[in-house]
Each structure stands twice: as C-alpha cells, then as structure tokens.
Length: 372
Image (tube, rainbow, N blue to C red; front, side, top):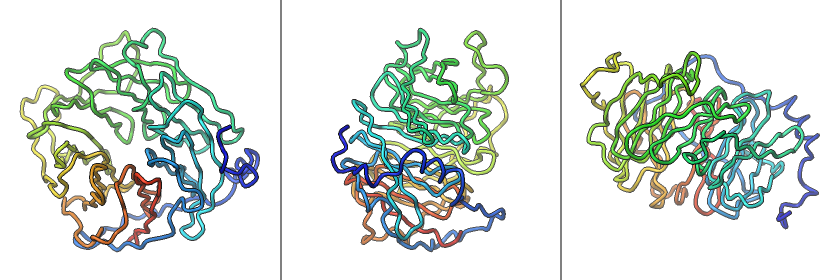
C-alpha cells in the first residue's frame, strides 16, 4: 500500500463509513427557487475542503455525495480522498489508493443508496469502489468493442446513474450500463469527439466534435446495438473552432454552454430550438462570454441552473461565474486577490450552497454561496 502518510489509524473503517452513510448529515435541499441577483454574487470563503490532507497532485476530479455532506478529491497521485464537509473542520474521513491508475475522472454514483464511487484513468478499465465494504472492482465489459475504447479516462455518469458515457477513438462515443458497466451501444459521429453531456432526465446525450458540430442522440426506449441511433438534432456551434467542452444545465436541460480553446463560451437556450432533426438553421447563442482568453477546461452549471462556472487550467485564477438567464458575468468575484490558482476541477454541492474549486497545487478552496 503506497499510503505512507495516509495514516490508516486515522482513517474510517468501511464499517464506520457505512454507518455514517446510513444515518446523519444529509443535505437539505430547499424546495423553493429563489432568484439570484444578476449583478452581484455574495460569497464567503470557508476553510479549505481538503486542508487536513492535501493532494500530492493536481485535483483532477471533485464530487459531492448526492445526499451526504461528503466531498471526494482524486488525481494523478492515484488516491481518492473523502472529507466530511461542514465548512469549519472538514474532517478527513478515508482514502482509497488505486495502484497503477493515475485518476482522471472520479464520481460518486448519483444513486444515494448505492454508496459507490467510480474512478478511471488512462487505462482500459474503470474502478468501482463500494464505500460500505471498501471493496474495489475493476470493470471492463466492452465485449468486442475494445478497439474503439482504448481508455476509460473520459468516463462520466448520467445524472440518475443509469448510464456511463465515454469518449472512444475514431469518432466513437460509447454508452455502458451504469450499474453493471456492460457495453450497451456505440454512437459514431464525424471528426474527433471532444466532449459529451447527458440531459438531466437521461432522455438524450449531447456529443460534440472539435469543429463544434453537435449531435443530440435519443436515449429513451430500448437501447441495443442492433437498433439504429436516433438523432434528435444535429447542428453546429456558432463560429465553432477548437471546441473543448459542452455542458447542459437548468430545468429540462434548458441551458447549453459550449467552450473553446480561445476561452470563448457560447450560451444557448434550448427551449428556443426548433424541434426537428431536419432543421437546417443553426441556433444562435443568446450570449457569448469572452472574459477568459485561454482554453476552457471546466464548465459546470449549479444544480438549480442559475449559475455557470467556467474555468481554464492554463492560467492562474482563470475562473468566472456567469448568471443565468442573463448571461452576465459577475465582476465582484473572484477578485485579483482570490487565491484560486490554476483551476483544474469544480463542483457545486447538491443543495447549491457550496462551491468547491480544486487546483493544480492539490488544494480545494471552499466557498459558501450566501444566496442559498
């Protein structure tokens, strides 16, 4: 075990963690949507999320447990660390060392009762960790499709945990079962797939190539490799070149953000799109955000869809919060004195109240969004 300083004495045992997960500290989500100010964001710095045990590498992934106040961090030091987040002590809970797997993607299962963590790197498998038992299982069930999925590093779970999506090679996007990890089907597009995102209700997936061509594939009904893929819509991003990221957000996945390698982010309102796959008219963004100048590496809407976080890991403090639906960028935060560093990962808590920002130095700053 390469865990010299991850003192096992201090770590929670699987039994203790399992007990914790079955009881306390649930996120309380407020039922009412309160509209946030488009001009000024009220934000307070809390104790760094991982100050008790800082990562030995850049934070490649951050994820909150869907119902409990637990944050995970992961990166190239092959270690997943769990913290109990209260904003004051943020107690380090436990860690999992994945030998031979520098981690590039890591997420809690969105299904709260499962208490599972999925992690992947530049390997031909992903890891499934059972928090109740501490067991780690390697999954690679591509069944003859290994040639179009040489690495699991781009793994992403759909919002309800039904699917896991992965960028394959040669224009392939692969879909596997979110519970078993078994290959379901592949979707082929033109060009190079750079990113994808699932609709909130898991009814479709958006796949985008580097030229900004967007495919929306239907995921409802029976999905088998024998049935032809149904394209709900195919269109091109306005001025799309060097596309790096795509993200859906808001109620009914109304918002869509597309980021590029020149720092520009186009914002679309999908509720205005013509409902036809044959539409030859490409939608126009309702706002183009031009506040960053280096390649967009992170795009994330908060759970209620009123905020969009954008970041570029290529430059220090290249991070902005965008108000939705106005598309205006908050100018009062971050300031030149906000210690974000080179931002490598972002996550909002499920109840919208907190924002965690991971950086290249292995630190995770934690912020309270006072509106919520």
